[in-house]
Image (cartoon, rainbow, N blue to C red; front, side, top):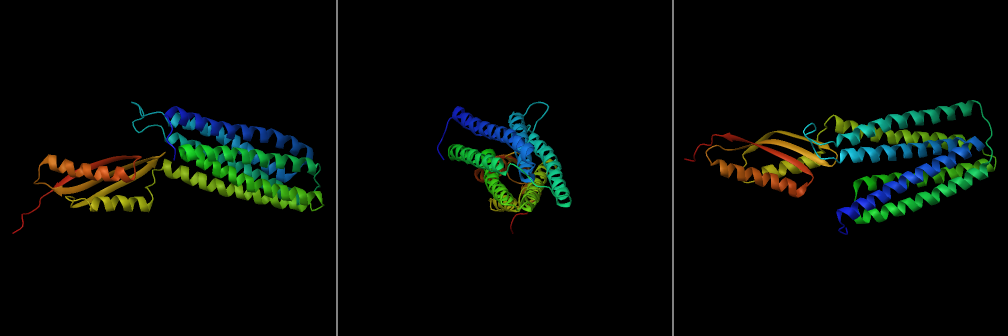
Length: 297
């Protein structure tokens, strides 16, 4: 990764997030017009996805700005959980939208009706594909310079939009040649796909808000570091959680109570240093518990 200044880092992230917001806004307006003209369910599903993209981008932008604020006297652990609150709100909104599209699709199955202006829908979908690919290229460039997790996640979503638009394009082409049920089938598939994504967003947000422990492999690494440090006799009450990109780690370690406090503190510092060497984005607290060690006979 190329090293960039803080100012350049902020500029690149602003470029990527602004392009995402502009993309969602332009596509939402164009798809709304085509949906009103064609009555296509796939366009409705795609428009709903663009509406969610715009809503999510705006909420994320505001939430990230707030979450990036440093800890203060009222929020000693910072403001990073604002991102999870925003994510949970988004998941509820997206779930409602996907259920609406699914319900509309089922109603169309019961009361079928032909769509119109398929060619206009095809043109808009191709336009959507082009803009999405341009934004993905911008995001890829920004990631190569910053390795930003936020932009990586946004690019992943845009890449999934490319495949979604290809499915929409196929359904519109089939509808143009008289296969009207293709519109309904692809709308149902897209709504289910959107709802599936909601589950992942909601679960991740709830895990953070409910202080779920760190992944097992991370906890295992922490335990190995503790057990591998000379002078540590054992540990207990290991507690971990994640807020934003920060790992919060607290643990009690047992040491020889006969040694000097200075030596005990040096051992605890080595444990903290080794954890931070592997997981730099961590807040580590080591509690030192003395135990009586009998001299060897």
